[in-house]
Length: 543
Image 1 (spheres, one colour):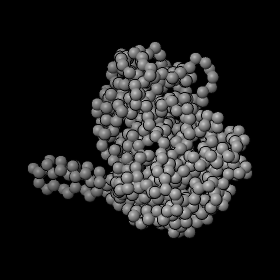
Image 2 (cartoon, one colour):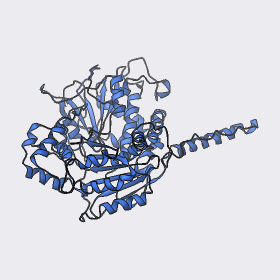
Image 3 (cartoon, one colour):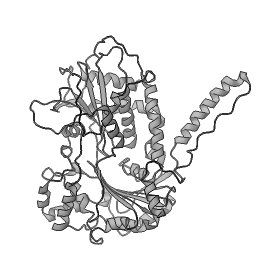
Image 4 (spheres, one colour):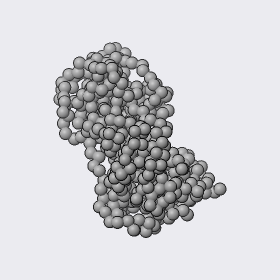
């Protein structure tokens, strides 16, 4: 019973008991001492304020380190310590996903992810799930555009048994007609992914990746007709330890936990690390324009299928958040941008334009993008902007293929408005607003990462590079250190919103359905955005 409660606490967003290595330093900072002499009050107050800022920074700093290495079999291993609960969290993350689907078989990798739950040469069907569930643990399967994760939480006493299972999960996977039909059936029951812009725009922003143009979680019935030898070939080629990362968060010291991992994977044949490059476009855009002939009009379209941070735009900003005063008089539109612009893709169904910017998979870029998106949604209209000028932002979540989507409206040149608002952030004019966003986000993330599950997931979805064999500070490895530096966030604004990493989505000429989902209303999209996971996920099912 105690272990079941411990596992439940590990999955709870706000644990109420237990203090371990990641809980230390959370006590409120001591209040500054009162100053008796009035003539020293001003200097002492200044000193106390500086000490309070330093104490606050130390209080929010994530303690501890992780070991990051690559085993002889090519598997990258990241090990961290969390002594808050007697449970271990193990995540096997494969760097592949729906973007690796062949054009003739969309949804293949999503279905193959379920196939790995149905046994191998050393594992009977369902043994992977039984190992965790029979011990009172919980399993979870998460799939995305370029990453598949198998997440397990179980009592730490069963860690060695789970490590042995993970060392056989990808070896000689069982494939027959019955197991494949079952895998496709499970995959087809998963909910579809909703996106805020056409999938073709996301694919174009990431470098015209054809595999991103379809819904990877859609498993058509035609998958059942694939030849079994073909499936075995895909499993043997793609589902390999050389392109996987194993994350283990347990109460013991990382050095001791790493030795247990090495012992479990010692029998695997030697292989070189082989991770596909997930690079972003860096060359100049292939299509530029000096003026925009699209006139945007304010719309009020809503839908129930979106997970959008665009709701921030609907919140009225307080005077303290405004970097520039608003004017009631109608101002002039921002000047047309001369020079490189994002290339245009005619995929949308709305009259107004949208701009999609691809994001790097590094944890620092992800956090910077989240802060910038919230800042954009809170920016006040400048005095020289038209009264109806508005810019909304939405973060399209994915562990490896995330994007920021901007919707400008109320101006003659939408891209000029985008550039003007980004320049305000990069120049530091919106520093107060940046601080109002990043400070609570840092505190919330620091609180979430006290949980072993959230810490392990953060490490698994972090940088794709690593494995240098040394210690890595958790504050840096998780990207949390970026939120302590507003200047670092502002400096990334122009990097994230550079024309080469974006596309402009305009209305296409025909009326064919492109699968676009419009932004939701403020209340709906705010709640959905805060509760959505990093990428599409589904609970593992026991056969």
